[in-house]
Image (cartoon, helix red, strand yellow):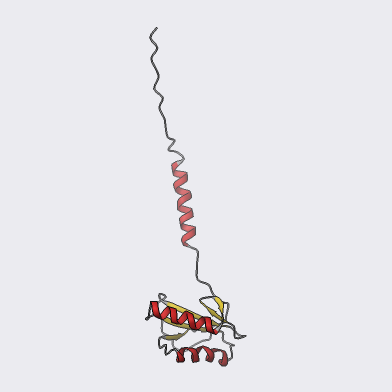
Length: 131
């Protein structure tokens, strides 16, 4: 009796591959929409004329109404902001510093930051306002 062995064939189901590709596409789209920029909720002052700067290579210093300081959205003290400016200048000297203050912030709080920048002789500074 001669029995022929049947060859086992492995078949990969391809109809579920489109589902996997679709889920990967959705995942990539959602991850790319995440905004990693931290912001402090403030009311921007208004200006008659404004100049747009590039969104690249910016160091943001936020000042709220109570005088609390934030460096790129993270609460910081003045000494930490000084260290952050020095580190940024050493790695990328053409980095622009944006000072973002609430409309109702007393000028003395903004002046502390300006005095620090003056002491460090940092000259590439912008005030962020609302058009």
